[in-house]
Image (cartoon, rainbow, N blue to C red):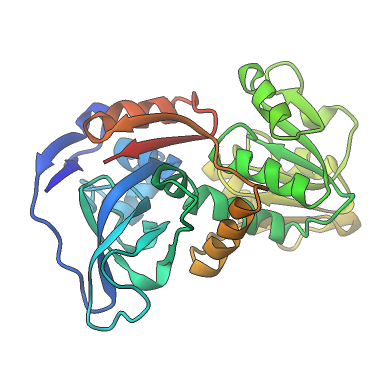
Length: 320
């Protein structure tokens, strides 16, 4: 089968298309004929090996996983002997980042317990754009105790997670402020954001506005700065961004709670229950994946660079 492979850390151009053996599913896995995959920040980090702390998890001197890609959508080709919920021909999607990656290929194996059936009205491209970004947004807003009437600020709102979060927060009846660069603000307005901020022109922590919930995908500010932008009893949920800020939140945020303000680091948990909830939101027309660009398999390096350099409005999808 064709797959995108890399053997050393470096620029996205280190990703090359090669012929490799088709994987064989274990007893608890299914073999998926991949129709589409999507690019996540993980992929940029895995390819570049930066920040270097990631090398402790994914290979100190060379990549542990030669085929990357975590969001996957396709058809079940074969099922392991312990799998009862899927059969060949089923159309599935999911996040396989916890089981060795491998989505940037014609076939991939995945544990059955991280997958869900996609609804027939959802294209494979939309399904591939959904698992990681959609679940992160869903779980982040849930951790932040989103409710109708709350004032919510989403930092990094024009990316994959952010575009899902804006839509979900509006469905819940929140007043939403989206923060990103100027060329993404019209997109945020089209998704329902009540207010938008160009971070290059205005610092949301210094406007005097306070929020019930701040959902942060980029963490360009210190935890202390963001805490000041919270209302009493407000919550600041970090999803991604600076390693130092994430570590600061993990070590200090859990016990430092002046005025009832809470700082939390989201621990991502892929699961089919949340994928099913995303299916329902999609079928209702409430939440639709925002896809900026699609690339064929042999152009994965270009796709990873496009996302890694911060250009994407929503998701970047690979069609197999």
